[in-house]
Length: 465
Image (cartoon, rainbow, N blue to C red):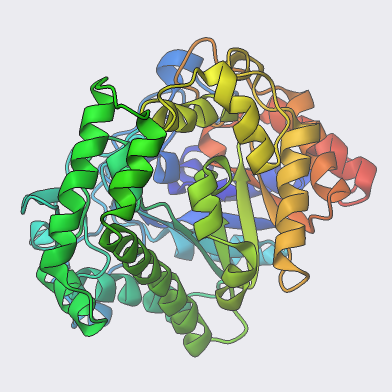
């Protein structure tokens, strides 16, 4: 179960654990211990649309974000990023792991802190209004035009060493069972398709690129016409041979853009690898799991960039995100990026079936999938089977089953007990070794989790109450 610290305060540690174990069948907790995102450390972020769940405190949470464990300065001597403890009144002075671990261990429940990059100002994730960490702007990316961008650069030495310190601090000071890590960063190509300027061209990125014999100034010159193409196509400008051919033309004339895309991708993966290594250095018995973005199976470019077998070299298990009832809107949003750029000369009804075929999916038509959601017996089953094939037996697959993942549209499909019930069955039928209810217990309805509990009972993974 993915769970935020506030649930233990709202419901009481013992009562919350009893509910999760006895009613839901949970045997491991993925606790958000540091974040500025309500989806990770807050209450339900879609309450205005969906109301409050059938447990917890039905009221907004004064979440400011930060770290929900005690600060230990000795782990941050090699970075200027300090003073990031949460000041949320509801949890002031509390160390959530110290509170939860003893009671969890009494019940045989594993504890696995979970982290997601990016941490800040992530649209749709209930971001805190401000990030009050001194000096953080010094870690920000610099875009193609030399502007300070909206996210810290993961190659920035201080930011990267900060993450190193966070992981080491957790591994050395708590009786945990592992770490779950999620990397949800957009690549330069992603950003241009979404209308943003590419990056990062900060001094550290320029230095690392030069060490790889990449001509940074030539690369910036190459990005200019590609970025201009995306701006023109998004604005509705027409091209003699159509948008897709024009994209290939401008890309083939400027191959440095693909070199930079690969460079960015490898540095992003390097952070994942480094954190895996830190966990294993601190305690080889701890597991390191990858919480894998659903965009990686909704976007054919990202699917090519993040093969499952490669990821098994720096993890002990994978958790593909499949938030089935919510997924139709997420998929259509991804398709709109293509429909507004590379495939602008085609209607969604024309190109979405081809995308489904490319991605190995078989879901409702484009004009129905938001309201219908994605079917557990095709979507969850298919993505689990795809991951199981992809990892080739190297690591187990634990499916990320969406339970009341936040909706943003009234017409979006609603989670039901049957949705969860069928998702659990689909996971094990496809060869999954387990599942993680996601994204946050504080936003889930127990009535929907009951559907999963029923499936676990039928499969023999949960004793009947």
